[in-house]
Length: 323
Image (cartoon, rainbow, N blue to C red; front, side):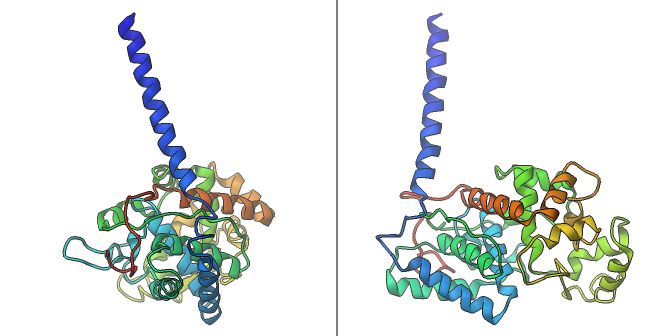
């Protein structure tokens, strides 16, 4: 009996410690984190993003994608920004990122201006998170309070990028598993997939879907084939919009397209293909506000994936390399 009581006591203590650690992380991330230490930080990010998106609408999608690809590899720690070093290979060279991930110069520009305002205070990871939100807003999407206080990693993981980022040919089961591994629900996965209401996709990433699958509108597939030859290696980098209706507006047209079997990637159409996520796609297709609300909430949760806080990590002076 004494041993059993000790065992229960041990479990209770461990649960308390784990809960305390989790609560501490969430308490350290705060929307007001820089209010006193760098009050101009958010306005600087907003101004640079506004200018960049005005110059090139696609940049909004690129900056949003940068945050997603950062958070899914060992948490939202700015590791995706790091260049090659003598101790690690950059995540920029991972399959899902190579010659595809963009927006680094915009982040560097923001960082340079923020450093002039308050040196070594604002992390690159936080800049990426704020820039993602501001990009969505610039393109007509919802806003949300970005929780701040992340610190930057000192290393990167190309293997993590190759393993954790959902491929464009993913099945619904594969998508669900990869998001679940990051602590995100199926509902959040469908909501976050709505980021494909903006941006462009490479031919190599939708070739299989338009030539091999039956769950795609025939006329839509035919139009895409004119830009994407069947032969592998031919036209691989040719671009088509993820949302062919309003490619530079953040709205709910993506879900309407899925209902019409006009998803660009196989992984897009998997969300509406006679499976358990069909009802959520239908709901978003008819209610933009519901999508916006769920998307904003999911972005906050994604931004909370394993942040470095306290004394862990560092505040990089230059986003592309550790201090």
